[in-house]
Picture 1 (cartoon, rainbow, N blue to C red):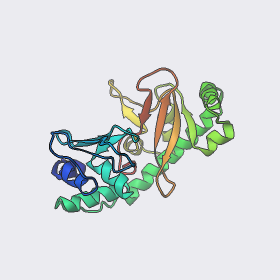
Picture 2: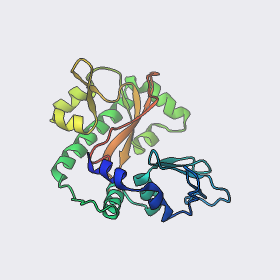
Picture 3: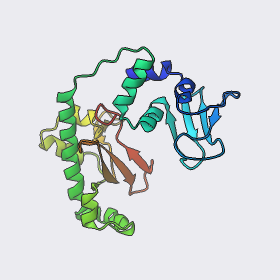
Picture 4: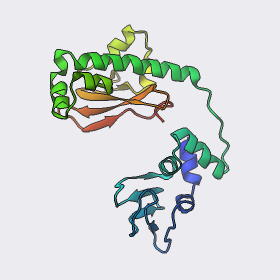
Length: 228
């Protein structure tokens, strides 16, 4: 069991949320006025069986106990995890992953430059047309961190190798994944990409929208130490 799983399992979501909202606990799904916006009716619901919450009002969003604390306390994932671990009596050791993080950030920087270049290439014509239809010209798209990942088996994967990014770093960063045949394929194929940065401005991952009709329509980088 990972630290995240342990924290979720040992954190009573009703008890945690009760610190911030006046929950009516008379039913199996406690309710309260949403703690994230002003309202008169109770549109905020907690589901103890699944350890989740959802606002059915103006927020129209939900999550687990960690995401609730992140939003309510304005914390990053690791900060909220540490706070909940302390409340649950779980020993929290700050991981020493500076070197690994540097490798993942480097891999993402190389990937971002690759995606950006392809957006302005002939292969990125459809993605550029889509962005222009949404009000983004080429300069705005570059400034906002948009790019394009073409369809293909090993486009980015091959490029990363030429730039000295190891297969392990590419996999851990969520840029490649292992296919059913055992080979390594690009995570994002035929997709418009957008950089997801942390508070320090480092690229922690990518969001991606399908441009060729493949599912899912939207795809984010998988979990990693820097993406969390």
